[in-house]
Length: 244
Ligand SMILES: Nc1ncnc2c1ncn2[C@@H]1O[C@H](COP(=O)(O)OP(=O)(O)OP(=O)(O)O)[C@@H](O)[C@H]1O
Image (cartoon, rainbow, N blue to C red; front, side):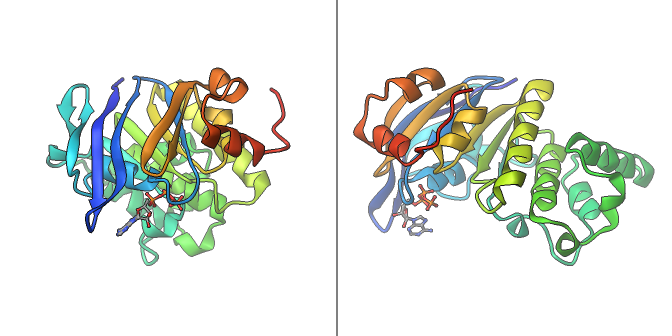
């Protein structure tokens, strides 16, 4: 299990800071939910952690080492809202997952590993022969998770992974996230604009607004005693928040 640590991270686009001095730790083996309205900088922070955006200031550390400088195998895996962006539409999903497996292994061993990864995300191993377009949105998102797990990551960053799904499917993907976190001891940064969704999976909740982190604490505390006006506004946007 590994901790992911953003230390005073700044990311700029054309001089404008989209992420402005954010410090946030995702403790090993826990899920931290990151919420904030559209444009608050959540995705930019996530992309910085996997080297997709250059960090203009600060550092992103994995167990104390700068993760943006890691060569080869990526210990931090990012799963997006739209699995089409991570799955090649012309490639059977099994091949997409196999591509992400580390190291060399015989074909039979690769196929066996792909089947086990599909089972882990509760898909029939036969799905490996299908193209992404033959699958439902929820199934594609499960394949994207299997592909991320194939890389044997220490940390998974899930960026709005349920936002494009029907509400009924959202619940089953959220259950899967909880299960994977618990069974594999993953460290997860779970990003969503929807506080109700974040609440369901998170040990801690962090809130971004205007590129800055404005609130962070245990999930129950942030939800019941929000300290910042932005958090209260996000809570007000979820009128049907039920207790569980
Ligand atoms: N590649 C880019 N080039 C220029 N500006 C960008 C780029 N990516 C993001 N931005 C800007 O950075 C700011 C933060 O965007 P970001 O996508 O990180 O926010 P977000 O909280 O993830 O919102 P959303 O959920 O809508 O994606 C916004 O003002 C956005 O327009």
